[in-house]
Amino acid sequence: MSIDEAAEAWLRVYATSVHAATAALQRFYLRCFVAWATHHDLVDLRFVTREHIAQYQAHLRVVEHRTRRGMKKLAPSSRCERFNAVRRFFAWAVERGLLIVDPAISVRRESRKQWQPANVISESEMAALLGAVDLETTIGMRDHALFELMYSTGLRCAEVSALDVEDVDLSDGVVFVRNGKGGKQRLVPIGRSAINSIERYLILARPLLVNHAWVRSLFVGMHGDRLGDGGITCAVHRAAGRARLTRRVTPHTFRHSFATHLLRAGADLRHVQELLGHSRIDSTECYTHLDVDDLAAAHARSHPRGKRR
Figure 1 (tube, helix red, strand yellow):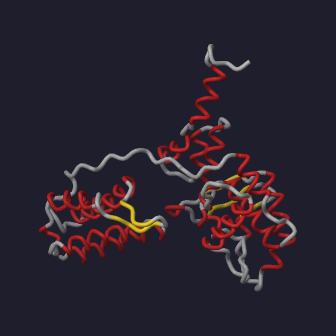
Figure 2 (cartoon, one colour):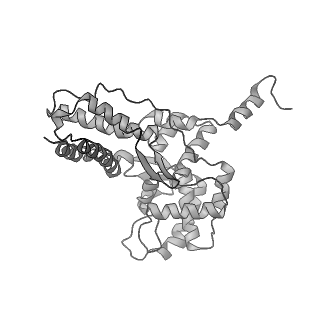
Figure 3 (cartoon, rainbow, N blue to C red):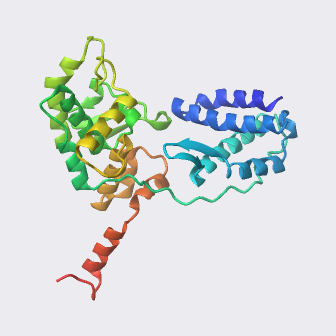
């Protein structure tokens, strides 16, 4: 069997057990490997050796991708993700009996530093962003409710976009995420400030935005349909500009800031893991980072020769 045919067979199987976005990303990663193999006249799956896998891993170090600031090499985490897709593919090929020996199993994976969020904003910056929204307009009421919910729950952008009105129980103060990352479901509590903002939006703004009675989405765009990822991103950029925030702010900034602020305030790591919907605790541990200001403040408070008068 050719590498191309085997890759397509594996991708069909893999897509049945993961979220559509995850499957699409793995397809892209594996198609990159297939393209590399084809370029090197490597077509038959049985002829792939350990040396080929090691060469592809080395190739990932020189791969460049386009960014806003021009071409840039892949980050270590991106290289690992692409290489892990290849490892999963060959492990499946052995399991299915397409190969006797896994050529990727003995290739040592590249070590990578723990990822840490770079676009966390402070509590005062978050307050400025929320305060920059014009609550006298329909879109302003929607955006304020949107931002309050994102900051109160730490939901991913796609999870917020997928919410329907019935997924939010304002009386009990919870939101039901029906289809989170990996197809997982979870209940997340909503704070009082977010509840008040959502109630205002549902009463005063959403009825003016919805064009058809069958629209069930919680947040509605300018054309009366579901507010997508692009619409959420535009709303965030618009508010960040009005608040004159100097650092880059995206929808995921709310999630990063939500987790970081909770942990800095003393929340339990396991609780934050559940709120974020992480399957592994090490995915949540990246938010336990401390910046220089944190360390300086702790030193000033705690060290016997460093306490402030």
